[in-house]
Length: 270
Image 1 (cartoon, helix red, strand yellow):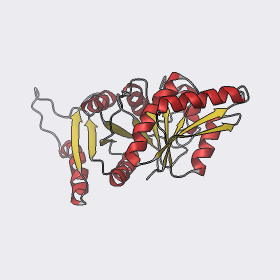
Image 2 (spheres, helix red, strand yellow; image 1 turned 120 degrees about the horizontal axis):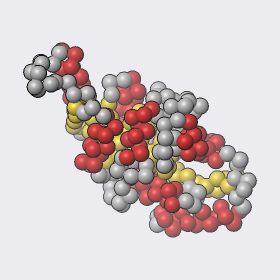
Image 3 (cartoon, helix red, strand yellow; image 1 turned 180 degrees about the vertical axis):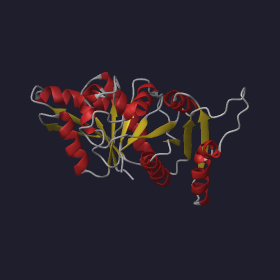
């Protein structure tokens, strides 16, 4: 599915965190680790070369390749490189500081999210960087068309890597055991949503399991689920594919990326 994992680096410790995850993704896909730094006008050649050499030391991967490009806008350059290499997967670190505009993931990440049909893997500040294989694809479902897009991506990853799928559906608590009110047909359908999709995939020969959790706060539930599978990769849908959108990921995905102990694949709409 991918022949390169593109990790933008700038010499900061956070970008080195993405290298650790990028190395795991490269092994998963049998791909080459690709470290890219953008030398903006305020960065000279010597400084850019130092960033690259630091990245190679952090990668500890003899097969890793590097590229230095010059440009005024780092995000635009990364997007240009990504579009020129359709077999590349972008993996980048993020602070996930807020929910609006460029404070969401910093100016570079904000400029990249949503511009690739393949999605991007985001490494949040709580991500566990232990060097272990990724052996679960955890798809977060919400019943929306965007959630179905996330599932389609998860299935493609599973097919190309042989990695089992886990389908996760978080629903608001539906039954009050004290009041003894039976659930409605619609509520029962909600509870069975992930199981129905899982059964369809199982019938097609996919290794898949499903989890349905009743919780008042979906991001917290998803973060808890990620902790159950520390060798997993979470797959979430973005709420808007437009690069100029104010709410690029939406509040749920943003909170998940910020708090998740595993990397998060953000899937663009459509």
